[in-house]
Length: 345
Image 1 (cartoon, helix red, strand yellow):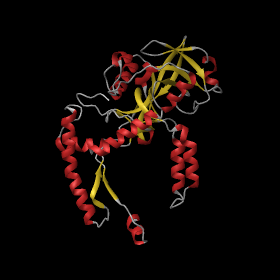
Image 2 (cartoon, helix red, strand yellow):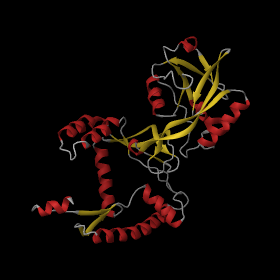
Image 3 (tube, helix red, strand yellow):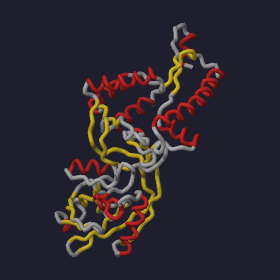
Image 4 (spheres, rainbow, N blue to C red):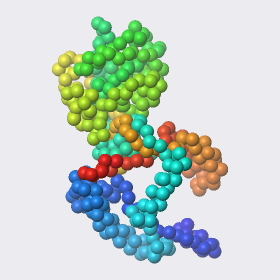
């Protein structure tokens, strides 16, 4: 509509047509179409299947666009998997790298166990999902300190227990050590204002990494991380007897073990706001991984200034951009782990 309107107003209009032939959606379609897995066949073979699937889809898409009367340049449409397009993206990466706008770092990242790749904050959505809130006994000297958690499988990665500074119930525990159940390791008990006294027992364990709040507190309190979940989305060797299990399997097993040892006070069914992968709706994990990052934090103020000066139709869309800018807390992780039998990253 925009191209046609501009042309009717007397402008010379270049209306390019492009076919997006990259992404996890393409890979999933190909796997389903040919009943294969990208993790079980050679990279080049999988790419050939992708090309075949995409050629079929592209033919239909172009036909539909032409039949709709779209006035684009169908003689010179581009594909995002063409040699020219890939050269463009690769040269862009090199240019950004040479300008010191891309760097490599190991830090906690959103990871989808189903897609088996790192995903950006923008690819994470939140869903209300039923969960068990488990009240677990942590030993403090000769007393029990009750911790409420939806992630008991992460006890192995606990590095601190937090209570609110004004919570009278726990004043006597602050500054002492809590003994982790199962793992028999001591962690400090710290007073911190971020704790919600009304949720659960009012005492929380800080693990690496149950959620983004854990990431923030680990940095603030300068805690040393323990990697509990590996790049396959399974429990690491740090989980002890639960190593190799999926997080769901480990959660079920450790709850059984805690109950056998009389370490669970009660369990509550709650609806938990859970971060999930936008594409497959799988609950994400936060895992420390080496990735490429594109700097975006230094430019947020400039982007926000642009948002104020642009004209929006309708005006309410200005706030959508501002909300997105305000939601950015880290630089953009741009690497994707789409490994096959021969490719890691």
